[in-house]
Length: 81
Image (cartoon, rainbow, N blue to C red; front, side):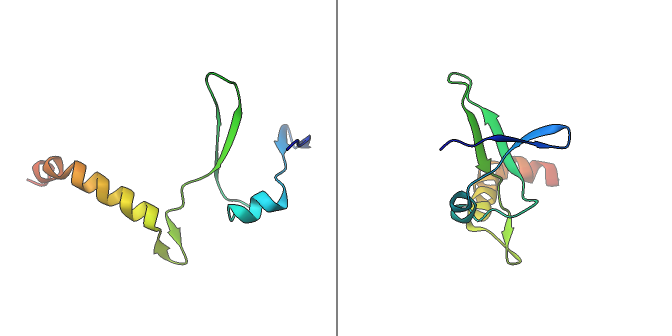
């Protein structure tokens, strides 16, 4: 899908189609990750990591936190001494 660049203050911006906004549950002010693929030069826009929704941590965040806790459990024990 093609989009035009628009002026936003001293920067340029790309608008997202409504269907993309709805699909990824994006909201005004939400952070997104912008990167450039090193080989193709493609600009990649991804929703930022959501840590909480409706006052509770997300399942993804919980899994990431548990994996980190498991991976570094020995180090955490040593640091707690």
